[in-house]
Image (cartoon, rainbow, N blue to C red; front, side, top):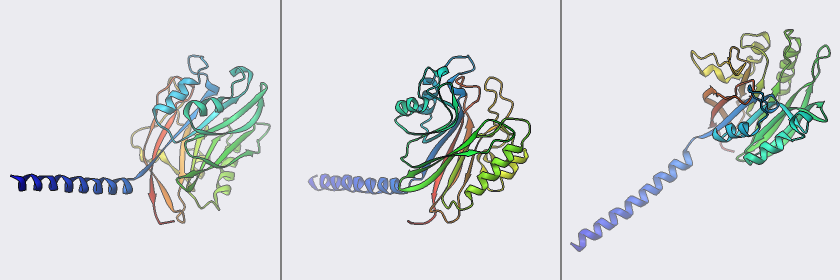
Length: 276
């Protein structure tokens, strides 16, 4: 009986050791995932006419986003009561933030914002030359320290006019700026154009549209109460020389009354292609 108990005890110990070993291997080889949201927040005013940044923060938190591109962001303007939108959201979500001011507006600034769970290595707001006295637009560019590796995340809000001259020029600038970028890049934002447009067709020669992984889903994001157009996008590019690559695994449009646009959420799988 004593020998049976000893054998049973040894079997339990071996089982624990094997289980720990297996779980350790699973942990070290488990795939990494990155969650990205792009959202034109209409300076925080929803389709009900209510200014409410909390519901935007709640949406980001509930979806556990790692990187967030926000367009139509107010910082310390009169219409938002002097509130710094990016500071508020970053504090609520315990995230890093960047703001790219494109316009002086109502005593404050107006432009694009980024939230990140990862530390920011660099921030640049590149102004796009406006066409025929159009609104000043910009590309908010950040580098993040993604677990010891650099990842580029760019946020853009392109011109809205029917004449697509400025949008096409903006795409040309984007392509030029990414020629020598040898790290993965995610480009997100409100492009104010449809998938078959000349501007986005040109962008697709360099970037991949995440929504291409979807089938039989039009991905409409505007207007939020009765969506009929896809104008909000997440694109990506993974150079062959990079130490890791981005692989989209799912994408969907979220439902929310917090803006006149709907947010787009994407999950990427991180593929390691070589050792550092």
